[in-house]
Image (cartoon, rainbow, N blue to C red; front, top):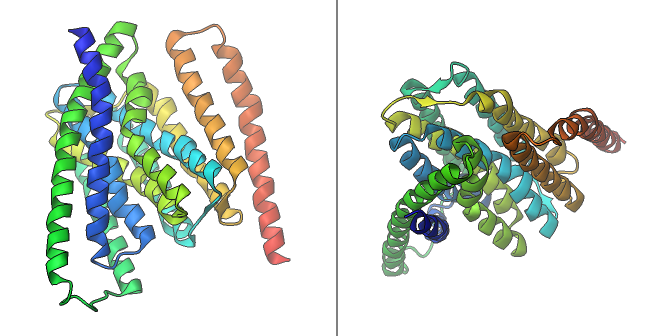
Length: 357
């Protein structure tokens, strides 16, 4: 039975990837009919599609009584999106940063990350917490789409000539969305079942499984989107997708999971004192990276990837209480992190000096 479950776990990854691809394709095509910009498409429509695996997994895990997996999945996905996936995108091609992200989405991402920490201080996320988060994503989506439509305008030329084609495309895209959602639901069930078996076999906590294996699996759509978009030169879509996905993960995924879960979602103490603060620190790290030249260079992408490797390594050293854990923690705390902070302070100072000069 364990072998079958593990096989279904792998198949669940595949179904999640194909399901998210269908969902993103259908939603993106529909969004173009309403005159929404590529950046906003990435921040909202595509971000929702690529966050759908996290939503499906969290709803399933919360319903079957695995709340630590739900929290670990969202926090781990948000850390992974910035450090690993954005880092890979920047390695492929340096990424341009839209000024709107600096003014609105980055502060908002930091704000909702801090809000999650504050709501979790009592050790749970209840339905009132979920309602607050869910209202936040509705307001953000409405605001983003409205601003985009006002700035771009809605094109109506040729609507009568293309009416039949538009109806046909709409039906096809709705089918893609429904088929994608179906694959996501099935894939999420198998993924959660397999993750529980892996945790039992290796004696690893649900939180660690959610922070690593499940978060990587549910972030595969973001990875595929970023790689394809980077290769095609859709730089705004790359960054917009990941920032938007992080917003959707906290506001939509955890919000709706807290709303429909049979009981309040327990937030592990380890997540409160380490993983959620790391998520906030990663969000803060975006400011100097994005602000200097409004571009993410390849070396900065490589630095992000190195930080993610260090984070995962710490998780496993801590989970196994390895003898190297104290030395590794000391190096990170007293050397790597301070050096990184000093480096980015210098970069921001040089950028401001060059701008004023």
